[in-house]
Amino acid sequence: MKKIIVIGSGFGGLSIASRLRSNGFDITLIEKQPDLGGRARTFFHEGYKYDAGPTVITAPYLIDELFSLHSEKLSDYVNLLPVKPWYRFLFDNGEYLDYGDKLSTTIKEIKSKYGNDNAKSYIKLLKHSKRIFNKAFTELSDEPFESLGSMIKHLPELVRIRFDRSVYRAVDKYIGNVNLNQALSMHPLLVGGNPYSTTSIYLLIQYLEWKWGVFYAEGGTGKIVDALEKLLDTKEVEIKKNTEVRKIILKNKKVVGVDTTEGLINCDAVVCNSDPTYTYNKLLGYKPNKFSNNFNLKHSMSLFVLYFSTKRIYKDVKHHTIIFSKRHYDLLNDIFNKKVFVNDPSLYLHRPGATDPSMIQNNNDTFYVLAPVPNNLSNINWNERGEELSSIIISTLEDKLIPELSKNIVDSFYVTPDYFENELNTYAGSGFGIQPIFTQSAYFRYGNKAKETKGLYFVGASTHPGAGVPGVLSTSKVTEKLILRDYGNSK
Ligand SMILES: Cc1cc2nc3c(=O)[nH]c(=O)nc-3n(C[C@H](O)[C@H](O)[C@H](O)COP(=O)(O)OP(=O)(O)OC[C@H]3O[C@@H](n4cnc5c(N)ncnc54)[C@H](O)[C@@H]3O)c2cc1C
Image 1 (spheres, rainbow, N blue to C red):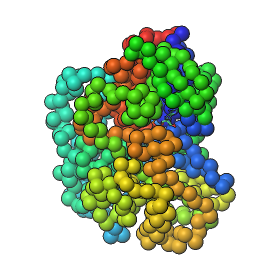
Image 2 (cartoon, helix red, strand yellow):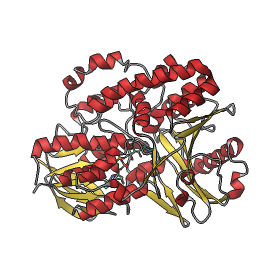
Image 3 (cartoon, protein in one colour):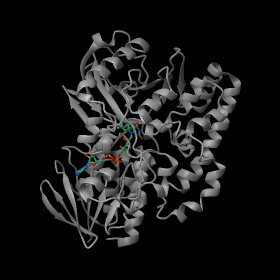
Image 4 (tube, rainbow, N blue to C red):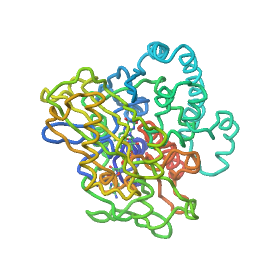
């Protein structure tokens, strides 16, 4: 039986471990942290439980597949609760828009706030998004792009759907209101992209949400991670926590093992769920051929995330509130390109208790609020500026949504880009891997299989098709195909 080591237990690592194990491979999953999940892990602080990262669960069939491969059902482990509405968008002029859950209600809401023309245009935009979805998600999200040629055959349809336009421009073609445009083009931010430079292929997320809905895992996203851990455990995947891989060992350009903080482990192949830029720099010590010549990869922005609990329960605060700053283009330019500290961030507020009463803990409300910030290629010293940004965020929430919030906080802590860089080993503390721009998509992304080294594979946010839970789960479908092609089924 072939032995494969998976480095990292984000959704990428957990899903490839499940897939390969169902094909009979002997799998060892190695995680640096004391718990599994990577960006989707759970934080416990002063008796409160917080989702560390993803909370918007879409395309749940991709998670279910990981269980059905072993003749099990996700629903026997986790209850997925529909979120209603999916998002409340709150604009700088005090206007808000409730979006998602029922299409008819959303259209009505757009019509009442932005007029009939914009409501009709939204339906047209959604049709456009569906067309992109049919090509880019249904057809291509699990296809390995191993050569430029494999991309070229899809070019005519990509040209027709105007991949060259940014998401913002594509939405702007349909929508005649600035606030509505900002709201409907925000999806790239969920996968690490600037709406002004992310290829409009990512408009597919808009339709993907309508196709399967938006969910929250009862008890927190960590319940999905726990369920996957239990599944892998019962299927005899060896799980090593608190173990960091320090080197991938090669012999004659072939992977033969890994050197970890707990000693050497031999194997036939390695799947890296660790960030590829970090992996090439630190664990391999070379650059992939494709990127070695002046190829300057652009990494996503990072995140400042403040976790807090309050002694008051804020029943009027929706599950996902996106609070737009007055500045939009310039703010994103400061974060993505100029990489400077911003003191007027846009915010995404998560209040799980709105959907799941079990997340009201000790009779207190729990939250996280997230601000996109520059990655660590900036010169920001987060030890010095962290408190400042935390205060700015709390006063913004007080001004715009939760008066007297600071008086009601009973627990709080935050993570900065340093957490992503030092704890999760992402290059420059990027929150989402490499950016979803066209020149970093499909073949131009990190390969799911390394060309220059035998037995070296990748899954996760920086590989094809990309970041976000559905994207990352799809990366492991691509990588599974490549491994089965190389090694056959190991049963
Ligand atoms: C705050 C936040 C909110 C988000 N919200 C959403 C959302 O609502 N919906 C959504 O779909 N997506 C969301 N995302 C994006 C989504 O969470 C990520 O795209 C996805 O979880 C990334 O998974 P991954 O497997 O690629 O990597 P990761 O989760 O980063 O996993 C990589 C793992 O590798 C481990 N590792 C690294 N190096 C080593 C080593 N040398 N040895 C051993 N282990 C190592 C790390 O510790 C980590 O556990 C969010 C992301 C963040 C950060």
